[in-house]
Each structure stands twice: as C-alpha cells, then as structure tokens.
Amino acid sequence: MVNESVTIIGGGPVGLTVAEILSHNDISVQVFEKNDAPSKEWRASTFHAGTLELLEETGVTEELLPKGIQADKVQYRDRQNGLYAEFDFNLLKDETKYPFRLQCPQSTYVQTLYNRLKDKPNVDIHFQSEFKGMEQTENEVIVTLETPKGTKKFRSSYLLGADGASSKVRKALNMKFEGYTLEERFLLVGTPVPFDHYLSDISYVNYIADPEEFLFILKVPEAWRLLYPISSDTSEEEALKEENIQKSLQKALKTDDTFPIVEKMIYRVHQRVAESFYNHRTVLLGDAAHVNSPMGGLGLNNGIHDAVDLSKRLVRLLKEGSNDREEELKTYNNVRKKVAIDYIRQISERNTKVMKEKDEIRRLELQQEVTEEANNPEKAKKWLLRSAMIASVREQGIGKIPETAEKTQN
Ligand SMILES: Cc1cc2nc3c(=O)[nH]c(=O)nc-3n(C[C@H](O)[C@H](O)[C@H](O)COP(=O)(O)OP(=O)(O)OC[C@H]3O[C@@H](n4cnc5c(N)ncnc54)[C@H](O)[C@@H]3O)c2cc1C
Image 1 (cartoon, protein in one colour):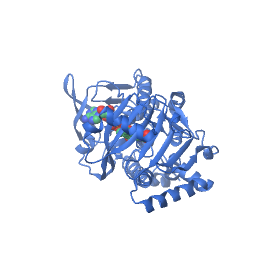
Image 2: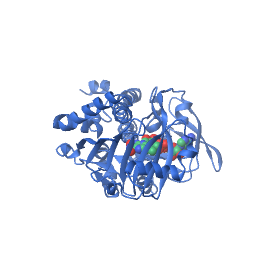
Image 3: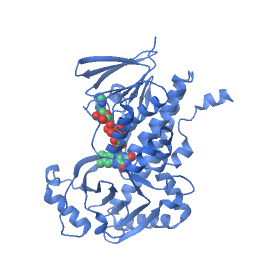
C-alpha cells in the first residue's frame, strides 16, 4: 500500500511552513534537516502583508505579529542629496488588515514554526539527516538519507525539495538553475545602536543610492541592519575587519562613534529560477526553486507563497480524492514560476538598479521616476500592492484549481 505521507527535505523556513500547513490539514509529514537544530541565522527580516494574509489560516500570523515591529513607510534616499521618495503603507489600509511590513528575523519565524510542529502527532522532524539521493516510481518516491544511524531509505507519496539555493533535490532531478549572479559581494552588519539618532527622519526600511557604496538600512526588534557592497579588490577577511566595518558605519551615519556589532556576514546575490519546479512526484519550493536579490525582502516571502500554493494542491490530491496530479503540479509550476520572474525578480531588480546606478544622469532619472510614483497616490498604491505581494496573489491566485479541472467541474 502507498504511504500517503509527504517527505520534506530541509527544515528551513519554507520546509517548516509547508509542514505546518499540511499537518494542519491532517496530512502526515516527515522533515529531514541536515543540521542538528533549527537555524539561528537572522537572514530575512521582512514579512509582507500578502504573506501575513496567507499565514492567517493556520494561526501563524497571530503568533508572529507581536514578535516583530511594524514598518509603515519605505524610504528611498540618495547618499548625497538625502530623501527623495517615501511610500506610505497607510495607502493600503482599505486593502489589507496589515498596512505595513512586519520586521522580524527569519530565525524567530523558524523557531515559532518549530515550536508549533515539534509535538504534533502527524509530524516527524529528523535532524542530522542529509538527503543523498532519490528514485521515483509510479506511486511513490524513495529517498536515501545519511543519518547518525547510517544510511536510511524513506518512502512517501510526494517529495518536497525545500533544501535551499544549493538544493541537492534540484540537482538530483538535473534541473538547470537559470539566471545570473551579481558581480559584487554584500556585507550585512547589525548593531543595537539606534540609527535614528544619527539620521533623524529615517524610516525602518531605507534604500540609499550611491554610485560607489549604496546602502540598505533596515530595523528588526533586536538591531539596526546595514547592507553594503564590498569592492572586487577587497578580500572577505579585509571587509570583515572590525576597523573597516566601523569606518563603513561611521561614513553611513556621519559620525566618529563606534558601534557594537552583533551580526556580520558576507554573501553573494543571485537572480536564478529553476528550469521546472516539479518532476513526477517531486516538487521544488523556496530557494531551491528561485533565488533573488534581497532588495525588497521578497525571497523568503515568495517561498512561503509557494508553500501555501502547493499545500492546497496536496490537500486536494491526498485528502479530497483528486487524481489530477499532473495538472495540479503543472499549474503550480506555471503560476509560481511566473510570480518568481514577472513579480519578484522585477521588483528586486528595480530596487537594486535604483540604488547602484553609476551613471549620474541615469541615476537622477531613475530617482525622478520613483519620486513621481511616490507622490501620485494611485501609482504609489499600485507599487505598494506589488511590493507587499498582494498583487501577485490577486492576479495569479494561490493554489487555484487547474483550468482543465475547472472546466470539468463546470
Ligand atoms: C542576508 C539575507 C537577507 C535576506 N533578507 C530577506 C528578507 O528580508 N525577506 C525575504 O523574504 N527574504 C530574504 N532573504 C532570503 C531568505 O533568507 C531565503 O529566501 C530563505 O532562507 C529561503 O528559505 P528556504 O527554506 O527555501 O531555504 P533555506 O533557508 O536555505 O533552508 C534550507 C534548509 O535545508 C537544509 N538542507 C540543505 N541541504 C540539505 C540536505 N541535503 N539534506 C537535508 N537538509 C538540507 C539547510 O540546512 C536549511 O536548514 C535574505 C537572505 C539573506 C542571505
């Protein structure tokens, strides 16, 4: 008999989201995570209105809201000329219960989900269990894992690859990861010292343009975070030196003060989308399926939207008797790939371009476009609906029934 449970590779934020929704819908899940505990890395720090709306059903939104701070404005600044545009989320107050960005580290979200899942009878989370390979038959998927007790095989009816940007599940399927990598590396630093003491009218989320060293400044409950590019002739060791980090903070905040550093990490930025998000009974979601620039705070949010979309399909397939597997997964692939390319990539590329444009005339033109958009309530609202990931849900749907099934039902 086929085991009608779902195997999830990766106990990161997206893997645990899909585990939460499936278990909430009485589907048994087993999660395999190669590390020995939930990740404590802060990484993402924004939850958009569109995501908070989707997480309402399971009660996760209610639990997350008091753990974050609400950013009701996003500012666009120029390092020389100061503030040139401000978008106010209050324009969305008739559109959503959440007219703000919830600023909260990814690690808080992961821990919240882990606490909810760990004692559920239909959820098994296995740490120190690394995905090594897989095979698919007509009715099931068999995965091979390296565990502290040796090599093990697990069988289930679906395999979900939520194992991040370097996904071994994606590689096992021989899927191309198409796109490009930005030439510069980024340094992210965090300090508990309040930046608003130095830049008086700063908001909780700020994109600051500069031809040499653009900045992204944002706040989470624990700290202010500053993200900036490091030049190609600077080694990672050099960039991470305390004195160099202090110099960057002092330059950004126009001060001689020194700052305690609670977070520092260097990373590369990629814009990539998997060739296909599924093969037979195996589905990719989150960073395993798409990665993008963090300018816009969209990567994790998009992974959560994948998780909600896919869960609705698996509920129909495993609980409601649908046998439309190929159409369901094809629709998942079409919709989620379109959102990754036409929404997420476009928004994050635009935010990156407006910050890093080196040509002065072009930079000022781009800034003028953003100013005009922010000052026109209709256009500003449209931009906010897109960047809050409400537009993609309204226009493309979430977990919508495949067109062929709709026709049969009618
Ligand atoms: C500095 C930074 C800032 C960011 N800011 C934002 C933001 O503000 N908003 C936003 O939406 N996004 C942001 N992102 C992106 C966000 O962090 C990612 O999109 C998110 O982590 C993706 O979640 P995931 O669960 O798909 O993958 P991951 O978080 O990478 O989790 C994958 C999990 O799978 C496990 N794993 C990997 N391989 C295996 C294996 N073979 N077997 C078993 N387990 C395995 C890993 O250990 C990990 O726990 C940011 C990213 C960075 C780096």
